[in-house]
Length: 167
Image: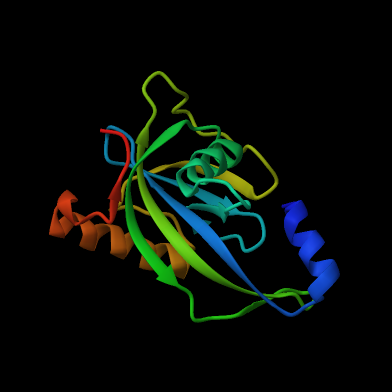
């Protein structure tokens, strides 16, 4: 879980002061309706794939990159489902403080791409596909909340998406 270079550079200037970051979350479903989850190495919890948007990087590109890096799976973002400002401040062991704006994307598998998940970096202990009715434990609270947002978006119909990508 290497800290991105741009954050290290900012931390040299601002120390542990609060840093506002844009994060992305990927809700990825396969053709059987299973959800892609990873077991986080930092918490031991199962979670949707998430990461930090790099400066100048399109958020949809961040989703594609993070899912590929963490799971080896190729995806296509299809809709921006939720934009939510986190109210909690995260304080890390070294004293760094952050707060996040989360962009949650619904994604499908990329045609002709890899759909077999594998642990791709040190952020995950395990990765896999799970039925929404049989999710592994412990499941991160943030994942439960974000999956609830995806369900609400679906119940409103795909026209409720804030933005659509691809088809």
